[in-house]
Length: 357
Image (cartoon, rainbow, N blue to C red):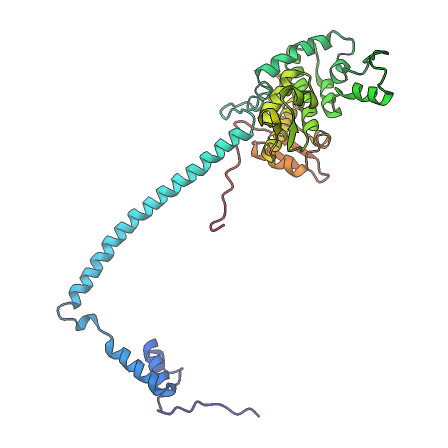
C-alpha cells in the first residue's frame, strides 16, 4: 500500500495551503516561510539582510505623500508624451509605407509596358502601339501593304519565304535541308498565325490589328532566338542578323528593350530582362487575341495556353507576371489559363517582408 506523505518541518511553520490564512499570505511571506523551514543558515542570513534593507516610501521623512503625488503627476505627463511619441511613430510608419509603395510603382513602370491607370476602358490600359514604340509601329506599314496585295495575304505575312527561289549557281552549295530551313526561317508560330483568321481586312480597324500581330510575330521570333542566353557576341547589326534581321526597327526595339549593350563586345541579358520580355509578349498577345486595335473595348481571352506552350512560358510565370500587370487570371481544372482585364486597372499591393526577416 502507498502511505501518505506529510512534510516534516523543523520550525513548525507549516500552514495548510487550503486555509484562508495561507491564501492571504503574500509571495514574499510564502517565500520566507519556505526558507525558514528548509533554507540553510547562509540563505537565511541573506533573506534577513534583504528584508532589513527594504525602504518604504512612507518611512522617508516628508517624502511619503509628496513622492506619490510626484509620481502621479509624472505618469500623467508621460502618458501625454507617450501619446505624442506614438503618433510620431505612426506618421513615420505611414511615410515608410508610402516609400515602399512608391518603390513598387517605380519598379512596375520599369517592368511593364506603358499603362494608363485612369482610363475606364480595358482596351486602353495597355496599347499595342506603345508596347511596340513609334518606329516599330510605323515600320510594319510596308509589310502589311505588300501582303494585302497578294491573293493569300495571310500566308504572305505568316510564311513569307514559303515559295523562295534559290539561284542554281549562287546557291549550288546549299542542300535541300538547308534550303528548307531558310524557307522556314521567317515562318510565324501557329498561335500567332491563327490570329490572322480573326481579322477582316475590309474593316477600318483591320490595319491596326495587323500591325499589332506583325509586331507580336517578330517579337516571338526574337524571343526564341535569344532564349536564355546570358551573352550574345557581336556589334548591333551582327547580333540583329543573328536574332532575326527583319523588320529592322522591330528587332532593334527588342534589342534596346530586352538586352544590355556591352559595347563592341556584344549584348548581355539578365533574368529580369528575360521576365520583362515574357510579360511584354503575354500582354501583347492578350490584347490582339481579345480584339485589340479598335475592334473591342473588352480584354478577355478564354485560353492563352497554346501561345504559352509555343513560347515555352511556364504556367506559374505567366500567372505571376499577369497578376502583377493587373490582369485577373483563372486556372481551370484542366490547366487552362483564362485572363481578363478590368478598368480602371488595379495592381496588387506590395509584398512586404515579414518583420525580422
